[in-house]
Image: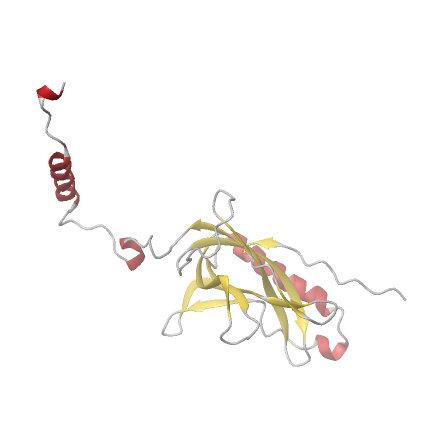
Length: 215
């Protein structure tokens, strides 16, 4: 009897969203010694692309449900890989948070643990971002992922496996500006003219005196 091949998981892209709890350059080992690459993405719930992804995830599980026996099929998914975002008071913010992850290791045919390739990370111009680049909360990105339905007997749902990320606007240690703290432009003190004067004085003081005898 021929072995049944596992179905190929689809690869989907999110719309641009705001990332948080980012572990895409280095795996997180706090709760799993093998390490887990992960990221959460906040996107507006009223975005048509978001609604389309939500429908796709639910449809994927419904197709999977058809492969379960009658008793298993009655169980409702605990998660489709996303949930409404809520503030500190527990109120919904109008955003959906998608949760992506993938293990940093896998078992080969001999049952030995091997390191898995980390998720590919590209910039807006499709160039690979160097390893070790600091990527902070608030970075805007697109996430490529593969949804995989599961049934463990105890729980069921859809896991969103992280494949790759495209960084659209990077927030890192050297790129935080006033807006990242929630500031907006106001009437008042403007440092720009003073900085321009300082630059002019510095240029004059650093320029060598010209002596006609040198020519």
